[in-house]
Length: 275
Ligand SMILES: Nc1ncnc2c1ncn2[C@@H]1O[C@H](COP(=O)(O)OP(=O)(O)OP(=O)(O)O)[C@@H](O)[C@H]1O
Image (cartoon, rainbow, N blue to C red):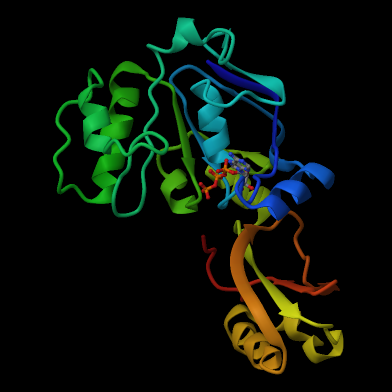
């Protein structure tokens, strides 16, 4: 059984450079706002269950896996594996847990040192061969096979709803904080089609006249992007960043300006769920 109890992790913000005196001075003198990676996450995974941790980039999935492997210490709360705290009881459980990190094309292994998935799996009993040329879905089968055959409990982390839909008995939908939990069907009922919103953050030099962006957030995703870029052409944009985030509330369509940052969020058009 795996259980998270109020699992919370805040990171200190990274220093830009230790060799640049100004960065070092700024780092020491300014109050540092901690970065939330996980906030009060609670879940309980039954033995033999395949449990999905579904969240967008930055939701805290890697942090949770690192806590499971005692590579990161939570700020507060606990992750219990077979009744042992993953940090204090690490020695008791380290032979029982197995972590595989993957990617879309190249499947990398554990954390920053690049151990391929096939290499990692070859040291895993009950897993068999892992040929190089397998399409991605088959890799998933290989990873999940022991669960079917010997009842291994699996935590499957992904940002891809489709990837979680079929294998997972239950899914935790989260983005640092818990959003919802249930079977895929239940989640669809609770949070609609699990749609994502698109966030565009633009950093510009000088002041923003929000009127230039009036009504932009109401447009649908694709046309909006071009209109934003058009409207921005008269500003000196230093950085345009777009990302998808999970909707926490059904409608949070807005355009906000703060200092020299413009943040536009909107619902995607009504077509199928994406991310
Ligand atoms: N060592 C670190 N120092 C500071 N902040 C960190 C560190 N590791 C992660 N973070 C921050 O914590 C948050 C959660 O990151 P994490 O990597 O756990 O998310 P994730 O869901 O695995 O994302 P991804 O899918 O992009 O890998 C992010 O805002 C990230 O920038």
